[in-house]
Image (cartoon, rainbow, N blue to C red):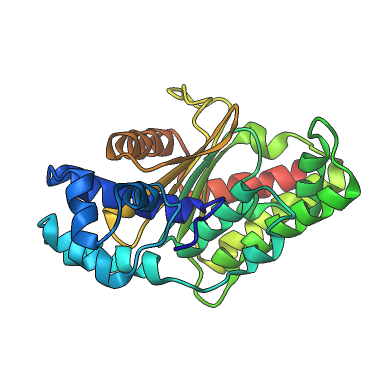
Amino acid sequence: MTMRNQPTARQVRLGSELRKLREAADKPAKEVAGLLGASSAHMSQIEAGSSAISEERLRRLAAHCACTDAELIEALVAIATDRTRGWWDDYRGVLPQVNLDVAEAEHHATFLDEVAIAYVPGLLQTADYARAVFSYTRPELPESELTPRVEHRMRRRAVIEGDHPLPYETIVHEFTLRIRVADRQTSLAQLRRILAEIERGHVTVRVIPTDQDGFAGAAASMMYLGGPVPRLDTGLRDSPTGVLFIDAEAQLKQLRTLFRKVKEASLDPTTSRDFIHRLTKEL
C-alpha cells in the first residue's frame, strides 16, 4: 500500500488510537501484524498514520484486542474509510498542513469550546481583523500567502454558520475585545460580528472583565473539540513550534479543568452580550 508522505492529523490520530488498543490488550506489534497479514514495518506505518488500514483489518484488530466498545470501533471505522475531500483540500500545497488539519478537525467535531486571551477567536474574526493579525507575522507574508490565509480563516466559519452549525462556546478576555489590531472601524465591525453570531443562537460568548477577581489564566488560550465518542475528543493549543494536537486522556482532562475554571471567572452569556454592546458604544 502507498505510503503517505505527510499524513493528516486525523490519520495520525487513527493510528494512535489503534496503537492504544493494541497496548491496552498487551499485544506485541509483531503478533498483531501477523494477524493482519502485514509486516512489522507495515504495522508501524499504520500506527504512525503513514499507511491506511481497511475496515476489515481494523475490525479484526479490535476483536483480537478484545475491544468491546462498539461506538468507538464504529467511529474508528468511519475515520479509516472516509475518502471525502473537504473544502480545506483546496489549500493543499498553498498553506501549511496544520491549517488544513485544524479545519478538518473542526469539521468533524461534535462541539467546540474555546478560550481566547490574546486575539478574537478565528471562527469569529472578520476578514479585516484576520488580515491585520496575519499581516503582523514575522517575517512578513507576501500578498500571495496572506490572501489565502485570510480566505481559509473565513471559510472555517462554515462549522458555526452552515446548515448544521456546531454548538460553540468561547470565552474571551476584555483585553481581547479592546485591542485594536487595525483601526477603529475594524474593531467596531469585529464587535458587531460577535454580537451577530450570538443572535444566531448557536454561539455562546462569555467575557472575562479586566477587574475580575480570581482569574490567573492569562495563558489559557486553547480549543477543545468534541469527538464522535468522548475518547476521540481533541485539544488544540498554540506552542512555540505551532499548533499542538492533544489526544492523551490525562492532558484532555487538564484542558477540561482549565475550561471550567476560566468559565467560572467569566460573566454569564447575557451579561457578556450586554458588555460587548457597551464596548461598541465606547468606540
